[in-house]
Length: 325
Ligand code: NAD
Ligand code: LMR
Image 1: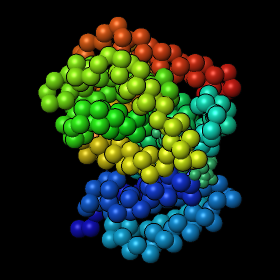
Image 2 (image 1 turned 60 degrees about the vertical axis):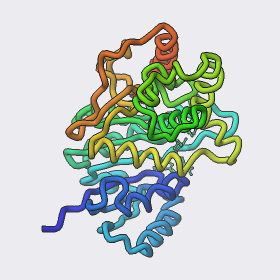
Image 3 (image 1 turned 30 degrees about the horizontal axis):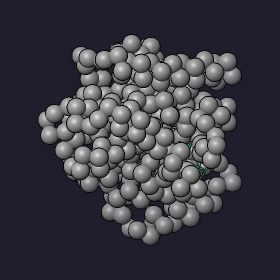
């Protein structure tokens, strides 16, 4: 019997990331090469026409797995029966802006979308927030969806994870596939902490294979500020690499994965206050993210994890102050 299509809702579908993402979803890369999908494209009214143009192009690909496309500016309709929601639509950061500047601009989007998910989505809904500030936007959406299990709201730090793999591979002149146990801790922001003290290359701790000055003064800032460097170079924020990371995150969440990084609601592990949506070392088992437990955290790492978590607490306090949660 033919499998029921999985409904995937993408917000900001007419944007840059949307354009890099939708064709890959429709081709089977998000969920698996044998899983039919139905796409729902949510946009603001001014961008619906452009999203319809993208839908025409999707039609023109004749993807065997794509069973239908709808385009709408109505969040209730877009999330109706949704199994996967990719919340991409937001105002991107432009040169000179920090994520904090975006809280007010974008916070207002994620409350109503969280409520629309709460009221309309399928029982197995999984949400990945890409739009920045991603961790706190995910928290806002989650807080407006009391009927959805809290752990179904996640934010994307997989792009940071992939950036860290690539930087380390280039430094050590090894293929990325030789690197295991990479972790991004904290916020998807310049305070994030890419951790080489648990990462392994060829079975040995990565931090022991690079000099401390490179780790501290080159690796960490290069990974943490890569988003700003891309904006500076491209004149626009990362799009294809962000779409690629979103695909990686959802594929692994649904299909299972060994050690990777994802921003998920904290259960208090590693001193991260419960409820904050913070990046951790995770595995995916039975369709759920689980935080890898029992890692020793040295003073160098502790200081950096704490700084990023403090920023998440400040963002939470700021959106409380603004009445967004
Ligand atoms: P973009 O401006 O090209 O597209 C954003 C789209 O969202 C636009 O088409 C806009 O009309 C739409 N939109 C705005 N408000 C909406 C709403 N309420 N409902 C539905 N759609 C809405 O931006 P982009 O380059 O695609 O980036 C999107 C977001 O992703 C930005 O916030 C950016 O900062 C973020 N981002 C996150 C990461 C990450 O690693 N987490 C990486 C790159 C970009
Ligand atoms: C990125 O990491 O590329 C994005 O989050 C862009 C940004 O706004 O920093």
